[in-house]
Image (cartoon, rainbow over all chains, first blue to last red; front, side, top):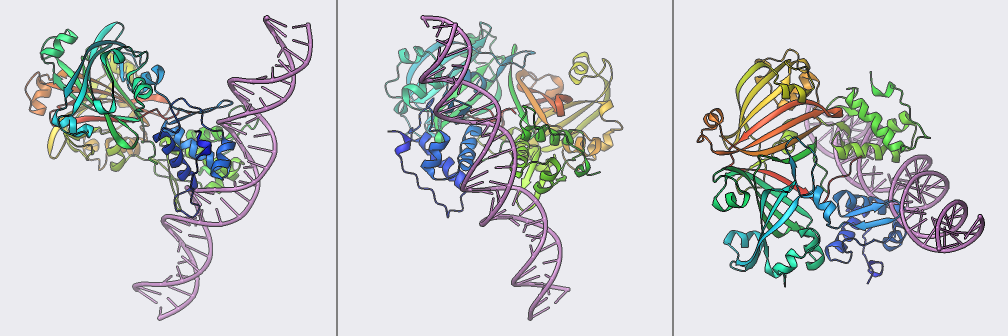
Length: 257
Length: 257
DNA sequence: TATATTATATCATATATATGAATTTTTATT
DNA sequence: AATAAAAATTCATATATATGATATAATATA
């Protein structure tokens, strides 16, 4: 059923601006999966009729969702729901570049292991699942220029990824977040990372072929979906002799909505 | 002389949209310091007359500069040029939080040393100054909750900071970037950081009171002003046992203009 | 069939205007 | 002088409309 058959209630007397109400209604369509990743959303004229407001108000609402990263407008073509794919992955969630370079490249990825485990207390707490529930623990190696500098440990709760197997995981043709999106209907909307410098333990030093106790970067990433529901805990161990973690920013943060 | 007396030439036949031409003209006023940090810019009606376009076009241009962080609009009050101060510093350029916390706090800062030196080759190259020219090298300690976890080394070219002395530097009542802005007319617009994990050398281990060779975070920050002119090289050495470097992001980057 | 042209759909830019909300300034009142 | 009320200023929201730019689809032509 298309969203053009849905009924939206916009309150013209609300103190919340119309454009924000519409933005929120459209956001809820994304959240409730009534608009799926990659999908073409109704054109502006249709949205005008659907919400019974002027086109400027529609453009404001859609424009905000575009700035937030949920929609992508293409002139002459239409407006689409953002989806995770190889190209978006590269620029969003992979923050590394070779020494001396400012350009992010596509990383090479190699599978290490796939296990089913019981969540630790802190994992369960962070994931919002009962203590001791089942999680998948997946190790990957990542790198640049055919060398490997990064070990990734992924923890995801089994209940949100029913039926996930090593074969499905390694058989994916796209990014991990694309797998979540297309096979498990989970759309990662935001990530936050915390970085520390630590010493490599035996496992990491073997995997990355570096001396034990070598200084490495440890990155704890929390991947969330709509409404800040935590989906994935990812820990990256990075040998940074040849690569840098990169973080750029302008003078101020974008406006919160 | 107020910018209301300046003459702007807007080309209505250009393929560049009017709003972008106006955004660029206003940006150039910032760049050329015809609009200073903290200053109230002309109201929308005046801008309409100045550029001879409709108010919607003005709002689009100003709105973009607001999103970029250069202007701040206040309903009922006016639109102001962004300025570096204590509050903005906290949320823009200080990326640390205590373990377990997601909240950035205001750091405590302690001066260590101020020296005049000859730039190394790479420093000169990065700063765009002749090899061997004079730079100021300044060390600070930073931390949270009265403890110190960070050593900052700042390198800035003498020619861009004429007359800077240790007394002026330590006598500042606000942030370092506020000092650049108000005393030397240099406005930092963007920063990029590259992070590595390294082992603490003797100097850092003494300054931070940690064992030699302890794993620490090394952050190379390049601070730039308008048109990507590099102003400051800052290297931070961070003992991350008690604090995290924090980096959050949404699904996509903001649109480039 | 292959290519060029035309039409259509869709978002982008721009104008004009009216009303509302938030803040400061001015005026009136006690 | 102190307080309250009114006015002025400024940005925010919303409508209505016209034209342009871009990509795709349909059609005409060689």
